[in-house]
Image 1 (cartoon, rainbow, N blue to C red):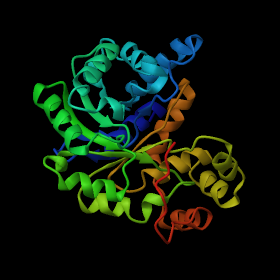
Image 2 (image 1 turned 60 degrees about the horizontal axis):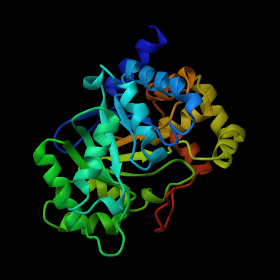
Image 3 (image 1 turned 60 degrees about the vertical axis):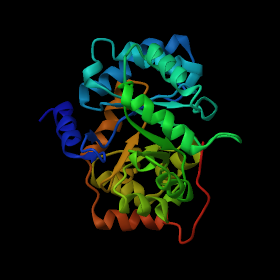
Image 4 (image 1 turned 30 degrees about the vertical axis):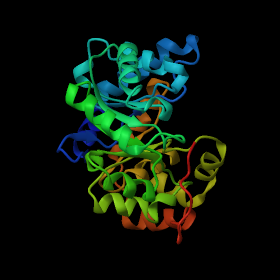
Length: 296
């Protein structure tokens, strides 16, 4: 079986289910910092399209990324391919009021060259004077108008999620997007178990970290190198396979070249054994107490 066919089959098998039954591949595509360098535009568009070719239909962006430039890159990448993509964008907290969220969403739609979003997320908790209730009302209004199909949140800790689900229509939240990778396992203590209990998927951003420390650990640790060799994979692919090791987690790594995108997607073909997971836990242990939510 060709490499691309094997990847497509794995992504069709390794899925995450939203509360309404929508099925998504467990690995999607992140776009943070895309669109910030005009000379990389064509390469970034091509990378996103290759991801779509492989079945990485979830594309995550935000109005904050590149001050809208990331959304414009995505809009070009999905030109004539809108039905292949599950589009996710995020709204600034200061735009998440009843008086502003409609305009913010419409601006994102214009940049993305589409008339609806599959998912719209509150990027992080609001500022003084705003309220979750007001934001939920705004999101629900957008959903009823058909401008968004689902809504969720990002960078919400356990207490935030509990507060959200206690307000009117707060339980309609479809996903929480947080930082999660081997070097940042804080959510394993209470947030991830809480979301599993409430059957709410987790979207993991920066699943390979942002910087050299995690990569250095992965590349130099003998246990990780041994596991990678066993699976004929690279240490970073093992890290990504670990992130999606259980149901209910959708990772959105960024890929900026054809090979990078292929390697990210190929992580879906890796099934880590219990022995693999024990060895990984020794290198990157699960926290034994509550820690503050990591945010980039």
